[in-house]
Length: 247
Image (cartoon, rainbow, N blue to C red; front, side):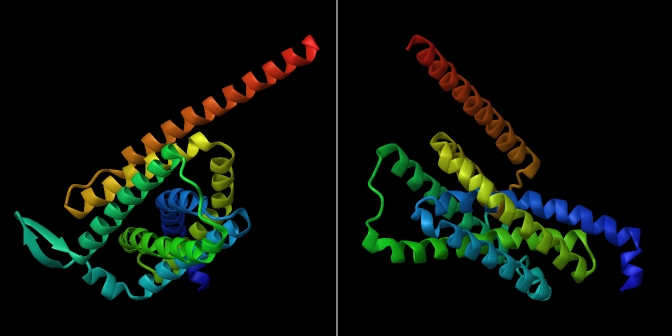
């Protein structure tokens, strides 16, 4: 164990894998922030904690089931010359779910439908947790396959996953609060879900879209939205200051 702590190769793989896991966790945070926003304020934090706990459990279980996980990439059948595995099926299913969920939430926001009645809160909470569990499973597949490809020691993988989940937990509250405080950012987050869904389906059918392109597009759009929010605040302050002088 002491040898591991002084081995620069181990530390390099840990730092690299942790950074990669945090980046891959962005998708999870975006979905989590959007899905819990439909719940009453007093139970949103509990839903976030449960969602992240499930993400952590799925990842750790999969790490210790590495042999089974690697088997998910074995070919089941071929369609038009394209090999299809269980991993592909899971990614396609998860991607289609994100596309359907994102479209539904955009429709809900544009049409301005009423929120769920108080009597339906418990069932809505259970449905949200179920959806979070499904997407956690999908995102965990890619996360752990990446971990297996980047590190040789399972202890390093577990440590990296643990740190990434902690970062996700800290970031989830801030991201959710920002989305709730600025409704226009929710529509942006939903467009991210659609983008992620397309990427998952593309991966499942053998057309890999480099994640760097997706994350750059997300970062650029988010930066523009932040500038818009800041400009809106300045306009409000100017109007407020002008009104005060006029009175």
